[in-house]
Length: 230
Ligand code: APR
Image (cartoon, rainbow, N blue to C red):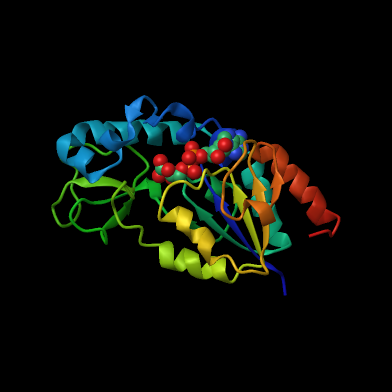
């Protein structure tokens, strides 16, 4: 039986595809105050602005492609039983071919009713003011905003608790509750971090830190796997 590998990924794995990370830009996200565009309060204040912000992100996502880090992670399914737990709202893991993916913070290519989180739809194009769900409520992006519940946390925690290897790629692990997931890592679990920067995860001391950007880091890791050293 293959070992169970859980990959926790964040904005850093998509950076080399051309999507900006969050914390690099002083709390701004593409020049917007994060709370203006990613909170229920921001939505109450200005729905048109929030919709336009995510429409732009969605249009950008049509233009970018998965990079080699996404592809290698998908290829590793030949060697491991892999669960991807991503904080990213892009679909680059899917397009690279990963099969088991949890999107903790939602998905850009989906929309939902602003009154009922069970009414979820495919959304490849813009959401406009006046576009309604089946309950007649305005459609909003299917994104978990700051201050909202993260419904997939228990499922993610279950996977992490059972992991033989946890691979953390390109996330600052600063945003809760996602950041708290590391508390479910078992004692015997092997930990690998791929990040070009220093991190201050609480498990940092017992992790192997490959201090490279995602693509180079995943190439290095793949080599180790092919040499049967993991
Ligand atoms: N390869 C790997 N890691 C990288 C790269 C790269 N090319 N470039 C930057 N990084 C690292 C940074 O050093 C940082 O540790 O990726 C991390 C990105 O961190 P954040 O910008 O905080 O992104 P993330 O951890 O995904 O943010 C979590 O915050 O705003 C919310 O909901 C949003 O899902 C997001 C969450």
